Length: 489
Ligand code: HEM
Image (cartoon, rainbow, N blue to C red; front, side):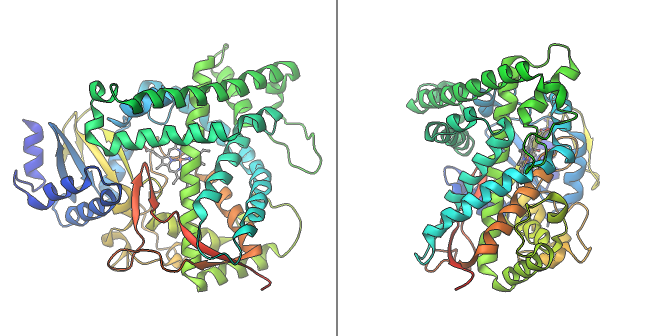
C-alpha cells in the first residue's frame, strides 16, 4: 500500500538493520530513547529526502530532522497523532494535544492572554519566586554536588501556578505537597505510556494498578484546580474584575498591575461567546497551562544552569552583562530591562538548542503533503519531528553543531529553520516570551548571589557528554547536578 511505497522511497527495506536496532533499543529505555533519536537523525540527513521511516506495529512513522522539511509540515499539518490518546484521560480536550476542531477556537481564546502587556507584568512574580529559590540554594553552599532540578521545578510550578491563579490565599492553600505530588504523578503516567509500547493498548493498561493510580491522581489535581476556580470565579463576579482586565487597577503601588491567566481566560472566553467557558473547559485549559509550562521551564532553566557551571567563561560574561545592564540595584526587575541582556538570552537559546526540553513532537497529515525535497507524504501519514535532531543538524549548524557556543545567537547566522525549540506554525508555543522572561529572571537572581560550579564525579557518556533520558521532557539523568558557592567568597 501507499505506506509500504513511502517506506521504500525513503530508502528503507524490510531488513534495514540499524533502524530495526534503534527501535529495539528505544523500547522501555528512557536513556536509549534519546541516543536512538540522535542516531536516527544522523541516518536521516544522509538520505535523499532527509527523513527515515519506522514501523511501530502496523503504523508507519516518518521521522524528520531537516529544518526546511519540518517547517513545511509544521505550517501545514496541525493534527497530533497518538499522543492525544494518552493525554486525553488526564488533560481532556485541553488545547495542547486536542484535535484541530477543538484546539482552534481554544487557541483563539488563549492567545490574547499571552500578549506582552500581560506577560511582562508576570516578571514581578518571577522575581519574587526566584528570590525564594536563591534563598533555598543557600543550604547547598559548600555541600558539594546537588540536583538543581528539584529546586527549579518547585520554582516553576509555584510561579506558573501564581500566574495562572493570581496571588490568593486559595492559591497558597492549593499549592501544597498533595497537589505537587499528584501533578507530577500525572506527568509520569503519560511518559510511561508513551515510552512503553505494551501500555499503548487500552485493554491491557486498564487492567493494571497504575491505571487506577492515574485516575486517583488526576482526580486530586482536578479537585485542587476546581477549588481555586470556584473561589476565583466567586471573587471575579463580586468584584466585576473581568471588566477590569483591559484596564487593570493598580492595587499595590509597589507592583505593576497584574491579571492572572484565569481572569484573562474567563474574560476572553466571554468575548468569544456570551456564556464563556464551561467549568470543565476552563479546568482543562488551566491544567494544560500547568502541564505545558512547568516541566518545560524547569528543564530549560536547569540545562542552562548546567551549561553555565560547565563553561565558567560563559558564566563570567553573563555575570558581567548583568552587572553592566542591571547593576546591583534593588529596583524591581522589569521585562524592558531583561530583554536588553542579549548575551544571557543567547546563552539560554544555545542551551535550548543543544538540549530542547521538548525533543520531539508529532503531526498527522490529513491530505497529501509535498515537501521541499519533492517527497509526497500521503494522506493519513504520521510524522515525528525530531527537534533534537533538527537543532544539532550539521547541515544547518556546521560541523561543530554539538558544541555549546552562545555566540551563534549573536552573530546573526541563526539558520531560519534551525532553531525550533518552541516549534513553528499555528500550533507553536504560546508561552515562548513568558518562558524567556522567567528563565532570564531566575538566572539574574541566582547569578547575582552565587557562582555555579560543575558537579564532580558524575557519570557521563563514553564520549564524555551529558547523559540524557526521555521523560516526556528530555532530562539529564543526574538531576542536573551542580555545585554553588557564594559570590563574595
Ligand atoms: C522553555 C520552555 C518551553 C518550551 C521549550 C516549550 C515548548 C513548546 C513546544 C515545542 C510546543 C509545541 C508542541 C507541539 O507542537 O506539539 C509548545 C506548545 C505549547 N506551550 Fe510551550 N514551551 C515552553 C514553555 C511554556 C510555558 C511557560 C507555557 C505557559 C505558561 C507554555 C504553554 C504552551 C501551550 C499552551 C502550548 C500549546 C499551544 C497550542 O497547541 O496551541 N509553554 N511548547
